[in-house]
Amino acid sequence: MAKTRKKVWKVLKWIGITLLSLILALAVVYFALPKGPRAPMAFDDPFRKPRTVAHSNSYMAAAGTPWAAQAAVDVMENGGNAFDAAMAALLALNVTFPQAASFPGVAPILLYNAKTGQVESYIGAGTAPQKATVEYFRSKGLDNVPKYKLIAQLLPASPDVLIAILKEHGTLSFSELCKPAIHLAREGFPVHGMLLHDMGLSLPLRAGLAVLMPYNAKVYFGGQWWRPLHQNDRMKLSDLANSLQELCDAEQQALNAGKSREEALDAVRAYFYEGPIAEAIAAYHEKKDGLITLDDLKNYAGGWEAPLSGGFGEYTIYANDTWNQGGVVPMALQILDGLDLKAMGHNSPEYIHTVAQAIELAMADREAYFGDPAFVEVPIAGLLSPDYAAARRELMTPGKAFGQTPPAGTPAGAAEKRTPAAQPAPSQKTPENALSFGKDTSYITVIDNAGNAVSLTPSDFPESPMIPGTGLNLGTRMTQFYLDDSPNGLLPGKRPRITPNPSMVLKNGELFMSFGTPGGESQTQAIIQVFLNITVFGMDPQEAISAPRFISLNWPNSFAPHEYYPGQLTLEASLYEACGKQLEAMGYQLNQLEDWDNTLGAVCAIIRDPATGELVGGADPREESWAIGG
Image (cartoon, rainbow, N blue to C red; front, side, top):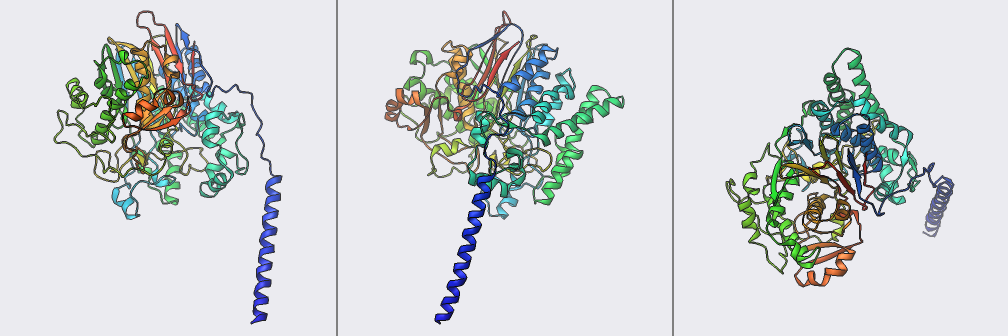
C-alpha cells in the first residue's frame, strides 16, 4: 500500500511539474507576443466631445461616423443626389462602424421625394428562413431564439435596400458609390471610441471568441486574439473589401456586356442573393447546421410600402410600418399633443413623468399589436387615430408612476383586445444588462440641395459566426421574435418587429426634419425627446441632441430573453441629480448613467427651412456621430 501511494504521488508530482512548466512556457510566449498598438493612425476622435451646430445653404449629411458623413457630402459635391449620397454613406458606415451596422444587416429607411412632396418607405428588415419555426426551437429545448448562434441569423436585407433605392431614385453606379468604402476597408481606418467600447474585449473574452467564433476573432483582431484593440489602431477589413469589390466587378461585367445601369444594378443584387456570396452563406449554414438555404436567399425581397404617420400640432411624423417599432413615435406624440409641455419646464420631474407615461402607453400597444403586417392584421388606423390618442391620454396618472406596463387599449379596427406575448417575471439582473442589447446600431441622414432627404437606421452586430472568407456579418435579429403565436411570434418568411426605426417630419406639408438614432429600446424615446426639444422648447438640433435624456424600461425588452424591469426609469447623471428624489416619490425605480451615455441613443438630425432651404444639423456626442454641410 505504501509503495502504491508513493507511485501515485510520483505520478501526481510529475503531472504537476509538467502542467506548471507548460503554464510558464505559455506565459513566456504570451508576454513575448506583440500586444501594443497596430500601426496607429492620426485621428481626433469626437467621441463624447461637444459639437457645434452645422449650417449649410446647399446640402448636408449626418451619420454615425465622420467617414460616412464625408462620403455622402463628397457624392453631393460631385453631382449625386441625396439617395446616391445616403447609399455611399451606408457603405462607408458598414466599414467604419462594422460592429454596429453590417453590410448584410437590416436597413430601415424613409425617403422624402422633393418632386412629389411625398415620404416613401422601403422595407429594410430580412425574413426568417423557411426552416425557422417555433417547433424547431422548442425541439432544442429553447424558450427564445438564442444569441451567439448561427440559427439566430435573419436573411440579409441591406443589399436589397441599397439596390432598390439606387434603381428607383439614384443616378450613380454602385461601383462609384462603393469606392470610398473599399478604400477604407483595404487601407484601414482608426479604431474609434465606439469600436473600442464594443470590441475592446478582455483577454478571456478574446480567447473565448477565438475558440467559439474564430473567423470573427480573425476579422476584428487580425488573427492575434491575444492582442487587444487600442485607440487609433489601424483596422483593415480585407475580406469585406474583397466582397464589395466582387459586387462592383459584377456590375462592371454587366455594363461591359451592354447592359443598362438598372440591369447592372440587378447584376450586383444577383451576385449577392443568387451568386457566389449567396452560395457561401448557404454552404456555411449547411455545414454548421444553420437554417438559411440558397432558396431562402434567392426568394428574398423587400418592397415599397406606405409609411405610417401621425400629427403633433402643425407637424406630421412618419415611420415605417409595424415590422419595426417606429410607429410608437407618432402614437406617443399624439398622446402628448395638446398638453402644455412647455409650461411644465424642460426636463422637470412633471415633464419627464408625462413624456415617459405617453411612451409607456404607446409601448404597451406595440407589445400587443405590432408585428409584420404581411402576417398580422394590425389595427394601425385605430392606433394612429387622434381620438384613440385622447382616450389613452385619459389613462395617464399625474404625479404617480404606472409601476408596471400599462394595459393595451382596444383601437378601432381591432377584432378583439389582443394579448401580447407572455410577460416575463421581473428580471433580477441590473437594467444596464437589458440596455446592452441592441445598442450596436447606427444612423444616417442626408438632405440635398433639391430638398430630397433620406433617413436610414442600419444595424447588426457580430455576436454570431460571420461567413468565413467574406467579411460578412448577418447579425442575430431572429432574437427579436417571440416563440409563440403573438403578433411578433416567429413564422417562416416573417419579419421580426425590429427596434431600428428612422424618422422624418413634415411641417405644414413641407419637409422639416430628417432624424433618427441607434439604441434598441432607447430609439423611439430619444427621437421623441429630441423632437420635443426642438418643436416645444425651441432648441437648435445640436442643443436638442446634446441635452440630457431619460428612458423608461417599463415593458419586456425586444431582444431575447425579453427581460422585464417594471417601473424602471433610467436618467443621465445631471437629470438624476436634479429630479431623482421627486421621481422616486412618484414611484419610479431609478437607474443612473453618466451624461452622454450612448445607451440612451446617438441622434443625428437635419432641419430644413422650407422658406429659405437653409439646413441646420446636429450629431450626438454620445458616439462618433458627425454632421457636415457642403
